Length: 453
Image 1: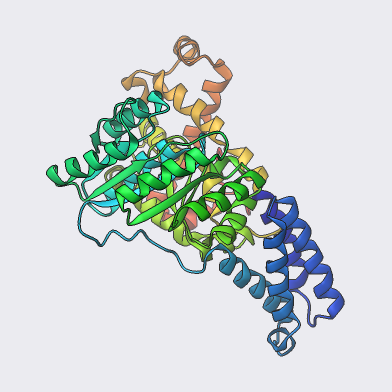
Image 2 (image 1 turned 30 degrees about the vertical axis):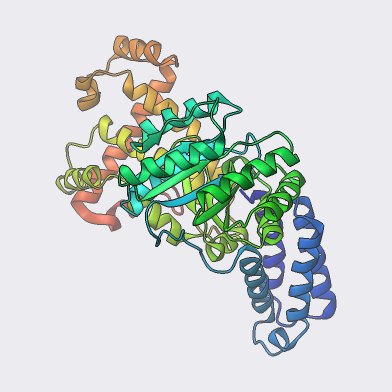
């Protein structure tokens, strides 16, 4: 997300960084670049105007003129305005109320409400240690009711059944009663959507809202919807007292304009970003961290939190013991490392959160060890027997042919993986014998670890 915007704004920021003094012409040229970058990213025109005016007012004032590093001061101003337009401070869900606390999800059909309901349930159960119940009032689409029931089972949440012949308000009232009897702390209500906004839809969702009395009313919007998202946000903002926004399909959107527009139009904070199809693909939205990522400054704090959440401590400790001894590292360990990186969104997702210098081609790094390549390597390892994974040197020509056929790849691919494993094994042994210094001496200057070039 924000790839195009990041590229343009990072260029503008770099052009300013070395300036000893800024003129009105410098500032005007930078603002023109920023304006074009925002418009190309599908940011709504009124939002662009507010943003540019905010930067201009601060840039032409004392803040930049009196700075010893005016270029950096202007970059700081752009960062500050981005943080402001994205919502200022992180806004966590308010779950401090008499249970069951109701969270209502509203939005157009296809925005990802049902999937988001399950993702949100899983997050609340894991992070807040709450009992969560899910209910669908989408009587217009029986498939949506069935989908939510399936997802509830997947995330181990409670589920209240719905009948397509029942009135949405009656379903909510029954769900509230069932949530109380089941001692659920949170009830998440998945409402019906339409392909287009109409009066019937708005009346229905308003009636459901009145019956549910939700603590949180979240507007779910597809981040790839462009200007349609702004129109939908306006309509839902007028019909319901929204308390926040959930942006879905954020990993498929390179522009990111919807995030900047919807926050401004609804006046409510973006609470979460939906990434990927998996039920754990929901990230808390932090405006300051996102502003840093947009300007190419990275987001190391989010990366650390993600590692703590998604990396298996048990497997990491087991690997650390093997590294200390300098032996025992096998292909099963290599597969575990690949899978843990995949759980974090692959190398690309990790690089997005790191502050990468302007002279380093991040796209080339992502292509070098992409998600597709990791999937292939995992498939090769899965085609081996446990004995072959433990003792890779036993893999001869006929075994390589069998492994390649088993995963639908070529013998050359198997050879490439084994060569990479041998190089990594040597590196591990160097680390155990002489620490990092010896390992770094064995690497080409400025190079990546063997096998990742």
